[in-house]
Length: 95
Image (cartoon, helix red, strand yellow):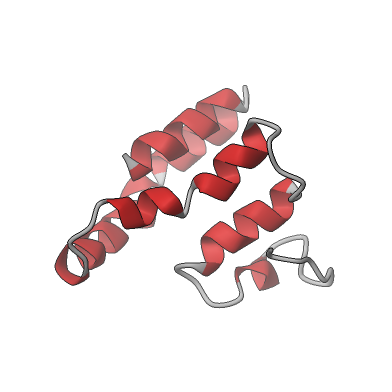
């Protein structure tokens, strides 16, 4: 479901280059996380809850900026993901 959520968002961008590029990276982006998750957790609801902020932003049901929502999502798995983005010098609120 995690991968399907992401693929749906990628397709919704209307950017076929972005969608193709991200789909080509699926193995790199998701396989190690899926294996680690399956061995460490037994609740399928954990990754679904972490998509709520993203979905609310997409649906226009949140005051959070898209940038803040994606950084919050990435911060669940990676330390300081904003340092690799165009937001590297921008202070954003993850709440």
